[in-house]
Length: 102
Image 1 (cartoon, rainbow, N blue to C red):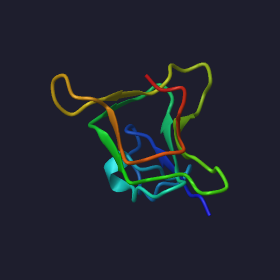
Image 2: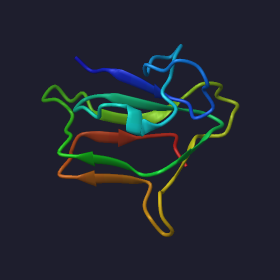
Image 3: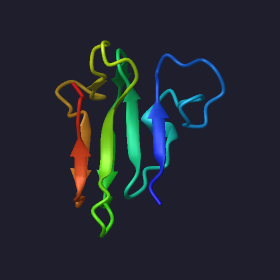
Image 4: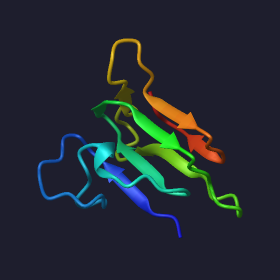
């Protein structure tokens, strides 16, 4: 069963990756195959995200990287960890969807 993890770098309370208590950084999450990783709109996330050997399931449930929150807010931004570094890396991964991210 796919899990949904919420990330909001502006969050200051307890964090467990849920909508009501989102993680402040993707590094707090356990990256799993067929998971959904949703970044809050209007926020900027610093650091790279790596998906190594993470595949969607055989029934075509993808690994999803997307946005959540106020649709009027700007799309979330992920800034790679080092100068000229990428923001999201995929190695030997398939059935992956990235949407509404900058």
